[in-house]
View 1: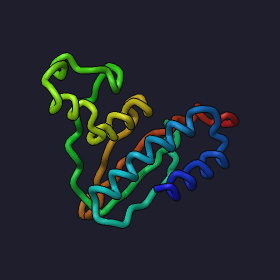
View 2 (view 1 turned 30 degrees about the vertical axis):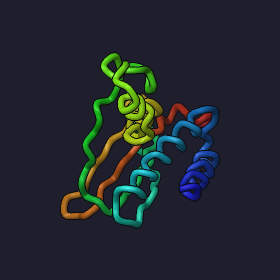
View 3 (view 1 turned 120 degrees about the horizontal axis):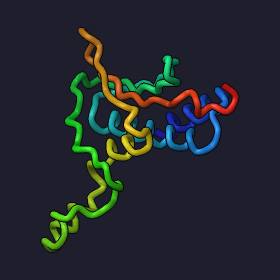
Amino acid sequence: MAHARAALRCALDQLGYTGDAPDDAVLAVSELVANALEHAPGPYEVRLRWAAAGLICEVMDGDPCIPAIPSLLSVGLFEPAPDKRGGGLDALLEVLSERGRGLQIVHQLTSGAWGFSTERGKRTKVAWVMIPEGWAADR
């Protein structure tokens, strides 16, 4: 995973992306790579490609199934849910769980500009994030 982060950061630097945007993109892609490593048979591949709206970073893995997308919050990522207050130790552990937040993080970091796709007849899926062209300083 560290190799994917370093390679993406280097590519974004070379393309002129500056400020916080590369950090957000690298973190979002890191979450997608972590999901590929944990949930799909290897190997995975990270690709960059240009689109009309900007740069798309894709993470392709060997699992053609698109995961169930959690209900994405419109409020802050770690704000307590009213129905999770009280309930003792089990409720507290569920709220503090590190699992299940990766796609929420991707959603927050990309302002919703992410998703999944599959190619007909191939046993792969692609998780992608959009890196808007406006994030590059000299484009």
